[in-house]
Image (cartoon, rainbow, N blue to C red):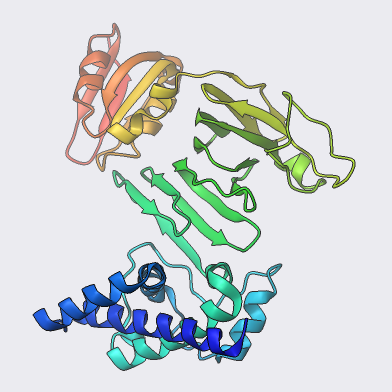
Length: 366
């Protein structure tokens, strides 16, 4: 890139950063809003720069207040794309801007730094410096829009770590369940890693649930390649675009392992040291949680109780372990166990005791 073009691009990003700061400050009168509208319409580059700077603003909430690296250091680190540098502290997903960058002058400093980075190493380089941790509590669900156009629906009591580089888009599912709608990017595979498995896709939609029994992968659209920890610990990453069968062999040119293909309408459970072949799945049931529904098909009461307790602050408790083997089928509201409790009360020999702090399920005394 010539020095002249470099300077022009840097100026565009700096102008975009200035507009973001002024919007966040609420320091825009009618005349300024008209100027912003004119500036935005001048070029598609202005639109892109403004959107990218807005995204950076959201991620400044995770910045370590003690960090004070200069642009040269950041450029070197961003280009070392084999290492994740903890320049940003993991955030809880609230995206609150801390006091350290609350002042306009401090925010402008970071935007000037970001402009230099974006031009020097590209947006992918900046994204690689981002590391965002999102989590949800009991009964909480949230939708996360990623900078590549993908979206994640995070279920209750779940946690993910988002790490993007120029070569791949990685999501660590640390706990719980998430539905991924992946934007296509053939040169950057989308990877979801759990305790037991690694799921790779280019552009598709799938659900990953980290359960006690293992990692459950359900594909809604497209297809993904799945390998378990035991396999991907000894092999290079899979390539979903080349896999052609239920389990493809390593590519002689790259040595990569394609793993097991799971297609739309299929489901696969990967447990420690073992996995089941892909099987037909009730996709609507698997993703019903996005509509605040729970669908069970001959599911043990132990698992049913575990599911309900993710959404309700008054937990269900099974007093008699043998009741855990009782099986439940049906569709229920995830946030209201009333219908489930009515069903359990109708079962011979079962007693439900509702208290202020919990709901106990026991065998009815004679």
